[in-house]
Image (tube, rainbow, N blue to C red; front, side, top):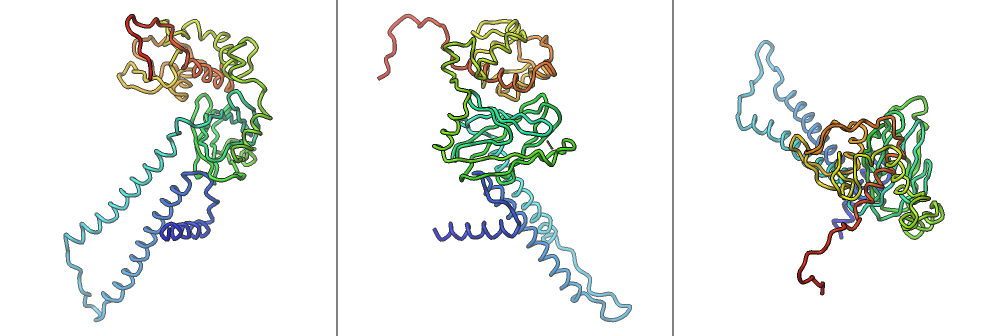
Length: 351
Ligand code: CUA
């Protein structure tokens, strides 16, 4: 308890001293602690060097004109110390940095997902089967939120200073960003990549609400249909999944990709999302949103083993919301029950 409040005091003090905004995401304090640690150690070393330099200035002063001062000897131990100490600090920072970085770039599996489209000069937020919002991103407190971001024109960068995380938003590609808001409140969104004359006006806001309030907002702003409605009546569906199904049909995706697991010219979409695929060069990857988007825009970049590089690029042929809809559609093909007959013999009854 005493240690906890001391570190909390230290955290608050350092944060104010450095004019940092409040820590709005779960990993913000982790980022700040690394920041403080690097700053304080370099500050201490700089201070020690200054004091030593001044002391040597006096100690080794040329006292008799024409006569050299005492000459420093050579010491292996000192050499090792002078090289080893900074090196071990650099390695320590690197280790701590990698730890925080991996945490920030690995969204939890249960994260709520929102599609983000950036364009000159605004942010648009699309909730699968839910509301569409401009400029303002509503999220529940205490739940991880994953953003799948793309741009309609140039490179932008999604940056929330209070979360201490930033990610580039690129045309023709999806990048991921996740956070979990720690407290209700308003957090500024900035664009952190110069994207034209209106760059500095390309701002937005994250509004973190208590879960109950968030659900009320979500229900009030939803498009009025659920995934279940669309499953019952896909023809008139307005959810991203239903839109994706229409895009797939209109763009001719289904001429080469099956959705029922059967073999075709390209890999089947059934169970594709999140599947581990082996590429022609022997490397393996998980078919996630960034990979699937790359496959639409630059299909030849990485081909699944056993298939020919015959797919055309859809760069410029698919709008950002259509890509989001396709991804949601492919993802929805994950849970379809496989039409396989159970093997003969005694069936297993779960107890
Ligand atoms: Cu968008 Cu700067």
